[in-house]
Image (cartoon, rainbow, N blue to C red; front, side, top):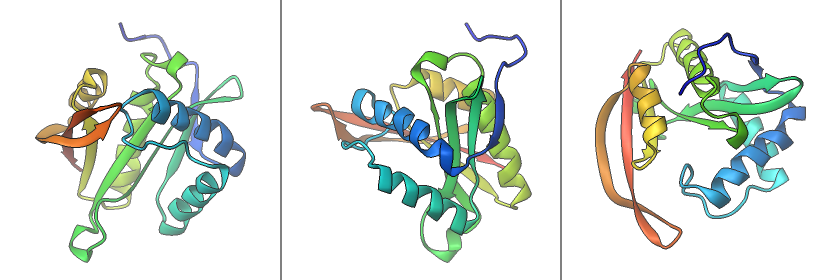
Length: 170
């Protein structure tokens, strides 16, 4: 059940002090879930470089903060490198495993949609592990449509994984 009470967290732009808690959230997802198809935990330097690259490209990085603690984050970036894709971005949302189903991902993604619209993007893309029903449900609720499934496009934890693509025109 989703918490319908007023959120007890705030959203803001990420700052360098947020890098370590963001890295912790991401690495737990990498090591324990199929939310990311990465195999290796992200290093401290890789996290620093990631934030710097997002900022240099003008892409937002948001955090959800609760009682002074980062409980989730979200960003988007280039979908593909060619000029023809300049109005399309792919996003990511990660939430602390103890803070899920509390509206954090919904708030982060809603804010990303606002920012993407303000940046005059045309399409936001999600690539979601097809077994992640919660994420698919969230995206549908926020107006995303199914754009197809790539069967066995990923491999992790000794098995082939399907990737569901979802899109929302802005």
